[in-house]
Amino acid sequence: VLQNISDTVVAVTTLNGSHCLDLNGARETDPDWLTAQRNSELTIIEGWISKYYDDLRKQ
Image (cartoon, rainbow, N blue to C red; front, side):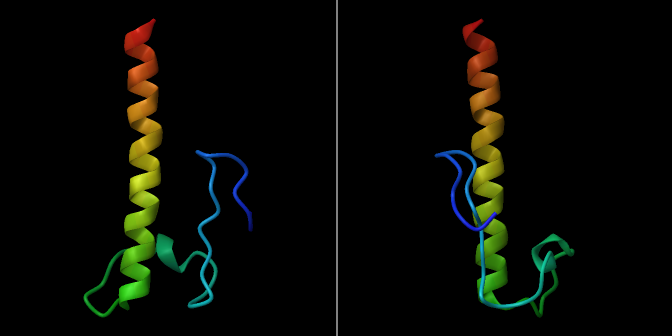
């Protein structure tokens, strides 16, 4: 996925590193861009989970 599909299904791309590098465990030697990318991914996933529980409470 190279472009956002919707407001909640978004592309997280980088010009640095290799495919799936962000899925490896965090290390002290990780560059700042990789740490920031992982944080962005966590924010996106937390948003999905929050929306799920918000929608569930509304039922």
